[in-house]
Image (cartoon, rainbow, N blue to C red; front, side, top):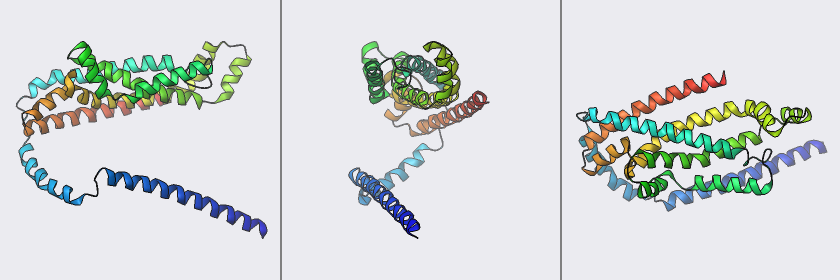
Length: 265
């Protein structure tokens, strides 16, 4: 009987801890909602008529300039592919130093982690503005902004995947006299490659959408077309551009799903 009482007491304590954790999280969530003004119902209600007035101006979509959007779309797609490629290359160079089970020493680990944190902390929009100021307008600053920011994200995911891989194949390879490079190639990479591929394809999808954001600051691509239409308040053209982007994103999502399945099989 005492055994069951102890079990019930442990369960009660566990539930109390979970309850207080959830309560603290909810306090932070609702406090944040209040800070940003989401509970300012008067302000929100005054914006509804403006939205209702804007919607008729967006329809029907204006595709009269669709022929001129082909090159910006190609630029955005090229930016996303090139930026992702740059980030994959740099992330692979850093991730093994940023993983505790493959790094050389704590100093190198902390340095690699710091680099990933810095690149992840600076948004691609800010990087785009800085790079446009440095090397001028065009797709190149946008590509570099996407690539440098993605290094922090991909490198972090890659390093975590390496840290979570099964230790037994690694220990077996080292016991057989394999070098560090051979351990990485034959024991670690086969385990983490599917996870790395998944994250990479997801990041490619994200980079295409992000290319529109950096395009808005002069880094080229379809984002520049959208911001140009917004500046002249041509909302019918904006809606047409958003439809085109939605179609392209849907196609890229289907391609990404297919590639992820191919890698995992």
